Length: 213
Image 1 (cartoon, rainbow, N blue to C red):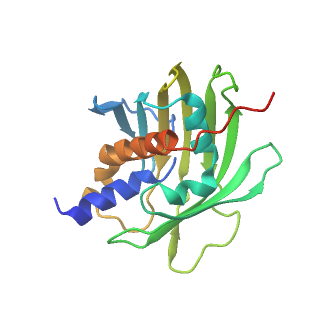
Image 2: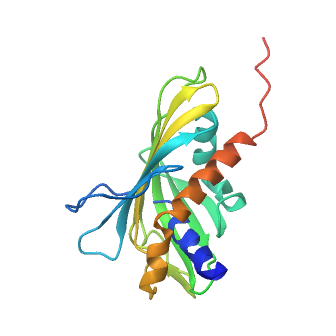
């Protein structure tokens, strides 16, 4: 496997997205360092992917990382643009992300992101976020392929002061002409790469001083 081919596999599944629909049985493709399961999404070229495991960072810090979509370009592989476009009426936000990929054309996606619950300042509670593509929210860019199927969720539960249990589900159709062997490669390596990127970012966030009494 060439380095460029492997990098494309990583980039493909770094697209943040989670589906739970579909009648197919889950297939386990990895048990370490995280449990990763996949199944076909009926009627599409996409697959539902389910990953879960322990991250060595507090739930509150992981929450901070995942809430900051505008900074994904700083630590997520191949993310070249990431920004919050505007708030939505339901308290969520519309976000834009562009990926620069080897071998194939750049991809971009617009997502409606909603935070369903948060970890409290005392470290209790569960963080939950979900998103779904809104590809027609504004016009496509020239020479960039717009992803139309991109949906997913994060769930983060505290397991200790600096440990969390994370469940990451997503479904994404890479769109355009993608060689089958390339499209399939992102199922395991890219998911691991994404979770490790989130963990590393959470562990290196500056520590905020406690509020003045």
